[in-house]
Length: 434
Image (cartoon, rainbow, N blue to C red; front, side, top):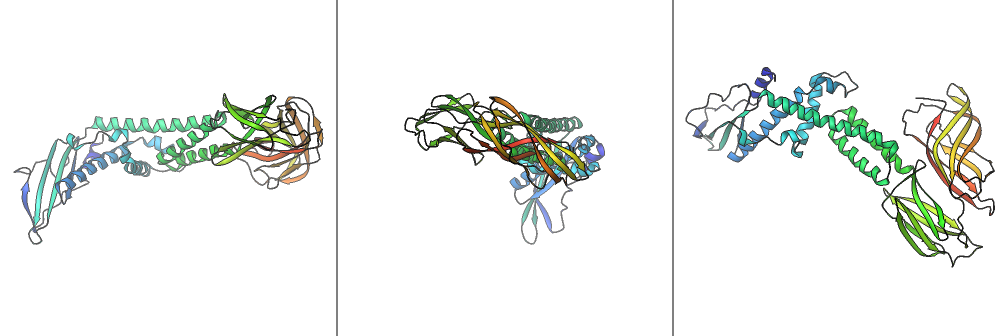
């Protein structure tokens, strides 16, 4: 520990001089100790005043705590601090940031502040003074608190260990973003990022935590509900995130316009919806509505079925969208080809009528109209379509977690009934690359 720094700490709170109007009426020792009003190596010497003895003791404890905090803040690795900032800031400003944070959160019992106690003070000296005219009294209180260099080094190590653990936690949450396995994990990680944003005392890391939190919040918008017919009167529904299944613990609410005996049973992160369609009519539209509530929003899926129990088509967009321009002229792109993957879960033939997409790269939606193509294969299907014309692309996309959103209109080729299926997927382009 820097001896000059210790001396500066010891002199932060100079003793209060006894004016001619003040008279010492009581003291803890007949002679003032030699360490009072001096700087002593490996000790903190603090002095405070209070109206009562208890107030003076508390002020002394607070002063010791503040000086230890300042010592830790001014001695944390400047190199480490500089890596947290985009600006070329010197060590003093960085230390001030640390000090402000530690002072603000000391009441939260940070690990390296828990052991500070007046019982550790080596010596205490106090004087009771009385004003000769007003008769008001005060307590002047001095404390000699041991604070050797090795203890400061231990506190710095402990703080840097704590700080490094917060950085690792943030990095782990970033790594989990594309691998979220449950809806509940999104909420837990958002809460963890709130706590990290409160902890980080520099703008750069706080900004990173807040940006990552926004990316997690955006995942809620990427959730969709899908499912497949298991057997007559049983439909297995589950949540998709960017086209892949994720679990959810909260049961959905189910209703129907005709079916009875509705029941929901958990099934390994998904749910089996059971229903009795005996009261449904074959010449009418029959369905079960499945509604999940996630982060205050509704996720819905309407499962259509015939009176005989057969399921209507269920087509789910998944994976990543690929947008390719035929040519790029400055900030204008010409002719956009879209390649997308859908999963024909039920295997029922379906017609694709149109696709409309809104992506951050373009100020206007991309519309792929009058496609009118029939797909009969079950499972994963690759679809390719072209939007003719020219489009402005004014900006460069920087955020890797930006999504395209929109919808595709499907047609049941047997009945002519149309269904609108939401699209919310990540995308790549061959223009405006990062």
